Image (cartoon, rainbow, N blue to C red):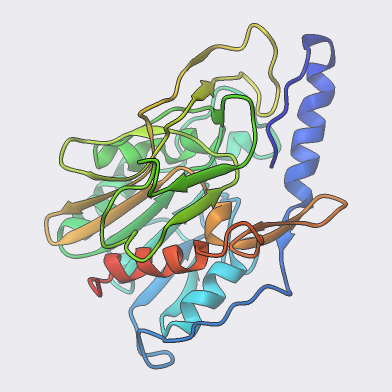
Length: 300
């Protein structure tokens, strides 16, 4: 998705355009989904479940199918989890992936309010599961998805902006070791540059380890409706906020990210623009995906 600015007079039409663009995103069937050196023998790795029981924008057979395919090629046992989180469901999972959940009220209605997609009971179950040794990858893209993810994020001390974190002046979103926007961690080792594709920003608890930091001129727009901006849209400085962080919690681990497309391979719009680890400008994104999974699985 590209950054767009709209005048108030065309705001209603802009919402339609933004949602139509979202519908045009689909998994790239031609992406390279191979893994040269798998961490595990086929179907012998950790059990990885992708949440698809909370109106998720990315699911195991949908836009996150390339993510799932790469994880399978690495030996993970991948499935979708299409139910509410409870102790029984989580007992069958080693690594839980949550990407862009939504409350039912926001289906087809990407406007405020954006309540959480999880009940207090679900959040308590997930937190206890992580503390006991589970692993969670929580991804909340641009508004309205931080609203849906908010209950889970706050349970681990993370605070999302329910908006759009955008580079000042537009342009591609690169996170690089050389300018300090990518920090050293087992997850980032061997990687020099990543690309993300329009997401959110967040703050992490003191004990978390930042991975990707907004540096070099960023602003955070907080619209009432997704993709609808005008000169009255509230904005605040984004420099220093985070796009990625890692946290150890009890015996378990959590990685929180503010952008989902970077973890999969999609084509978008009439031009079928490649967006994700299939993009020619993002050759190291797939390695980052694998590093995240390995760290969560305590393989690195």
